Amino acid sequence: MVWSGTVESQPLLMFLHERTDDDTEALAEAKEKFKNQWVKLPLKTCNNCYVKTHLRSAYSTVIPTRSCIRQSIASGGKLTIKPSSWFFRRNLASEILHPSRSGSFSHARLSVLNNLLSRLLLNKSEPVTVVDHFQYAMFALLVLMCFGDKLDDQQIKQIETVLRTLLLSQPRFDVLNFWPRLSKIVFRNRLKELVKLRRDAEDVLIPLIRSRIEARKRQDSMVAYVDTLTGLQLPDEGNRSLTEGEMVSLCEEFVNAGTDTTSNALQWIMANLVKYPKIQAKLYKEISSILGPPPRPPVTSDAMAAAKEEDVERMPYLKAVVLEGLRRHPPGHYVLPHMVTEEVELGGYVVPKGAQVNFTVAEIGSDPEVWEDPMSFRPERFMSGGKEGFDVTGNKEIKMMPFGAGRRICPAWNLALLHLGYYVANLVWYFQWTAVDGDDVDLSEKLEFTVVMKHPLQAHVSPRCQG
Image (cartoon, one colour):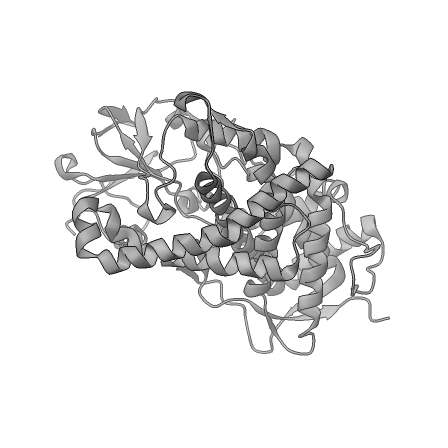
């Protein structure tokens, strides 16, 4: 890679001379080579444009773009990126993710919390590797929100097996997206493997979809995501209804999109609370001042005591801890890329037609010109008296954007904040979290489906109430 020139002003743009297999490594190389400076490379061969800025004015420039997301053969070829994508987003946002709907899933959250506490208690005498427990809990919660709260643990595990297998296998099938007519012949065995995985997913999910449709006819229960799909009619396709295969794809996306992001964000937050016990103690003091002394961890969820959604809203320090966790460790270091359809000038630089535009989410959240001592975990910066302040949606200014910003912001950002606050509050209320002897809690990062802990958190989990 050839580097030329440096740029010291905001907004900071970096153009990569050639497309690399791992942009994360390329950005790390540039950052190490030029320290706090960034680079601009010849525009004639520019493919990628990374933007790092906190100034709202820099975003006032209208950049004509289109999505870089292509239809993946690994999705089963059931959905395409069309105007109907916004139709699905509006349905999801209004029928499931709207704050007015959050209360209808309180029973599902409580059931998943009870299961999580019970799983953690099984190993209370030994250090617990929490990531698997967190991941399963978030997966179970999203499955219940998708298919209804009448599923048992065995059904949830069956869904997890087929969906996780399909998700983790997708990189293996990416080659099928290039020159599909040829690659389907050259890699026909791989295509057969993909078709089988897709069929396995449909064999598990379609009966659940049909069962949910019949259940809704017989009883009035919480609205699940599947319920909102059955009556949809696609306006740009003659008002036809969704096929079962298309509903499988949408359900798969709903469950997978929120599992790793939320579970890893939860792990990062708890890792910092283990690493900094004074912050954990301060948080526990706030929680117990509202909820009272912690109860003994339950065996069943009947009459289980737990912090409720309205309790979480009354805990400002809890909110600050969650936001600081998202600032320091956003689940994704970049938002989804978009391609420039017309040449445009941004911050004094020409972004050529065809360039991919992205935002360095992690860099924005750790900019020393915006955040005092940015690499420290200091929730107090988000308290009402803090100097920095924050706007997680980017409506006023962009100081951090863990969920993206603007009209393409993650539609579930509000629900994600609720779930993180809910589970952090209850985990800290019920348990004291301490580091393993001699373990300083390594916060090194590793890129997988999301940015995860290179060394997953291990901690001693002790019930605060021993009675």
